[in-house]
Image 1 (cartoon, rainbow over the protein chains, first blue to last red):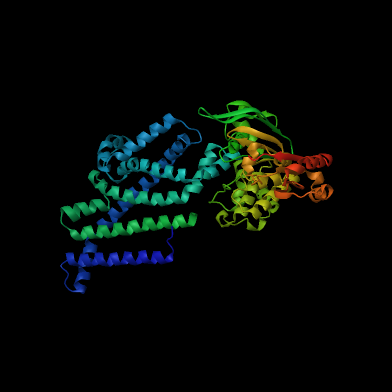
Image 2 (image 1 turned 45 degrees about the vertical axis):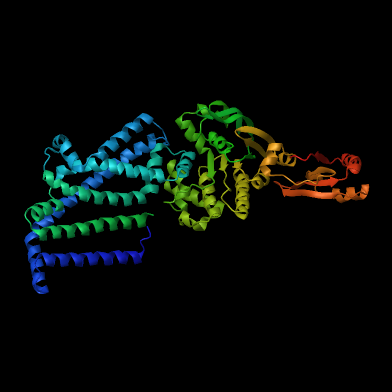
Length: 259
Length: 322
């Protein structure tokens, strides 16, 4: 919100400090000899893992992008219905609202790893198979959509009721109020929350390895942890840190543009 | 234009408006006055069907609001613009887009929209600020945008919900002058809800005084203020500390005699002394009116009253409680 150029530079600085620190840790892992040898070792390690690292990055990007997109769209739909039927809504329907409210909360209370396994039959039905990167998008979406619905609903509730009333006072209908009043007014805040959601999904996607989804988390777990290739873990962490920073920065940038 | 009879509105079991009856003529500026929570904003929202009502009749331009279907309500709202205390502009849009919004809702073509918006901004004196974001405007400018937006669909009636309550006195007067100007130019009928007495006095021909959902008074603004009912007195805090001895007399100055020097004339004619306890002269729609409270000795009372009677003045002997 107040992220002027000063604080941004600070964050950038912190980020590079983190990067340097990670490199240092990497050197330690590689029994750092001289800096030159250490750099050589880093280059070797990167060359060895490069292909797999980029493949995993691509898988992670696919999972995160698609599931964020789908859950944002579904969440927007659910939030719209909830805001219309809710207690202070434009057309209150207590029964509809209570049902949605319950479904959303039940889905949100399931741990993701349980949810993946729980909805496997559904995944198989919809995607043909339950194993792989793309099929994993379904459980990710199912896990994130209720979350998205809640935050978008909260953002809608934040919109000044007076503005909605003004729109009604010159004849706007429910659809027009949603798309032309609530959405544009709440959009900056929604964007920020979507960035948070995408980062949460990045975390969830690490568990996708459990069903063959692949991705950076899976790579770090398979090679880094199980096969004691610590350098692989460090590479994965580095890429994940950069990814998170990128997502958050993109969110902040869009927020500032739209506000 | 608007006819209300026996209107009743309940929230759950609680009646917030009870047996309201009045009518508003075309071209009038009608004030609805009361404390906060008196039900005046709720009453206003019944006019354009933002609130429903449970009993009685409310006819706007001959249409019973309660009986309108969705399309009818939409049309009704097109015929009534509304402005608000908190302006209720969209922060995500600039001045132009805010004013254009009702036109967009009604599917007016882009070219026509542009023309109409610039015309309206010209009318409210903000044509040079059409690109500005609404957050950067002052309160008075925001309300001007609000007025332009409310007039976008060429309504016949303008509803003002505490439209000047968030503005400083000078801006309030500027906005009231603007409202009067657009009323004249566009032949509008204005319903003005407010708790600000200066606003009612300055702007309204007639007014309705509401308290706890009940009508406490209705009539011409000046006559209501010059002879206030106990409720109105309470509302306008028309209280003076009276001198305990002697008799306190309140003299009204209606239009015809407000400029004559009645008080000094009386002092000379009767050759008596009296004290002036308090008084108020105020500007109403078009003229200055007011009252003066004097305190006379008991022994002069009869002569003074006789004199006032002769001069055809309006007066009232005040008791200590107000």
